[in-house]
Picture (cartoon, one colour):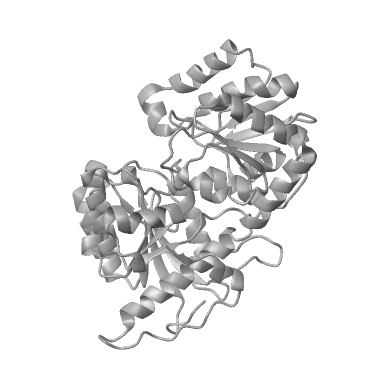
Amino acid sequence: MGSFGPRALRAAFVGTYPPRQCGIATFTSDLAEAVATPGPASDGRAIWARTGSARSAATVDIVAIDDEQRDFPAEVRLRLRADRPADYLGVADRLNRVSYDVVSVQHEFGIYGGPDGERVLDLLDELEIPVVTTLHTVLAHPSDHQRRIVREIGRSSSRVVVLSHAAANRLPSIYDVDPTTVRVIPHGVPDLPFVDPETIKPLVGLSGRPTVLSFGLLSPGKGYELAIRAMAAVVREVKNACYVILGATHPELRRREGEAYRESLQVLVAELGLGRHIRFVDAYVDMSTLGRWLRAADVFVTPYPGAEQVASGTLAYALGTGKALVSTPYAYAQELLADGRGRLVPFGDSVVMGREIARFLTDHRARDEARRLAYEHGRKMIWPVVGAAYRRLFVEVVAEAAAPPGGRPLTLRPLADARDREATSLG
């Protein structure tokens, strides 16, 4: 990483965090670990050095957004209760008084307090440290209030990171965010081996069965109904195909409605006579288990019904594992599945979706080519590369903040690995 002083970079990350079950929590944990870790250890396991040891690229601490009394791991130094206005000022004060070089803020409208999560602005207004904000949602059609919040986030942040070029293009035109502050760094993915799914299927009880997979927290709006209907067409051509829906019901949905949504999907499966072909795995799994399911799948599906979505951790993970991908054409899927890395199907068209899934399951040459292209692209997105890209960006904003008024910023050494530079690009 670049050099700006005698000690390791010290970064604070603000976001939801495990054991909370949500995509931002997983992202915050993975990103913090990737930033802190310069590379794999000799035995292939990542070393996360939180204390500035010789193997630590950065020292990281976590501010966990949490309205419950969860048992957090040791790296969580502060809690920010989303519904307590005083916490935002208190956390900012604590971060200002400790020798952090940069604060990485994960933004999603639903994780902060106030209408559309507007209290995040209270935190940003009080921070005196360079801030890099990662925007996980950039709507094409925001409300005026949402537009104002994102615009103010842009003005309060040294840099704004987005996960796709579609999101980067929206920020200047829709939100009036200075394009020179915008960076595209891809969603990180685990570095899993490229394997023949048949060698892994016995581990998940699917030996010899053509397997389709979707995973993520279960909730309406993800289009599972479309994929289930598509399987009716698939099984006419591939008699023993199985579609696995992996994931626990979203905690907020379960709190409000119990398992009503999962039960509605099970009713649909019964109505279509697909009981032998649809498997629900009701679990929030760890990375090891998720990796096993991903490697066992032949085809991965994201059937989202809306065009706006500019990021999908599930689609990114599947691409990084080298899956044959079928998706509706939301913004992120169009970008990630370009150049033959998958198949896009019209929104709401279960017949076409079923046809494309069946084609991958029966045409092994086409499937293997799509898998190869996906896996090769995914090497630019593995967490060590993404972590290095964030470190480079953090060093850039720290040097910029340290430069005397009107002076030249500190000279930085480039990252040693060319792949690290590939992960960062201007929006």
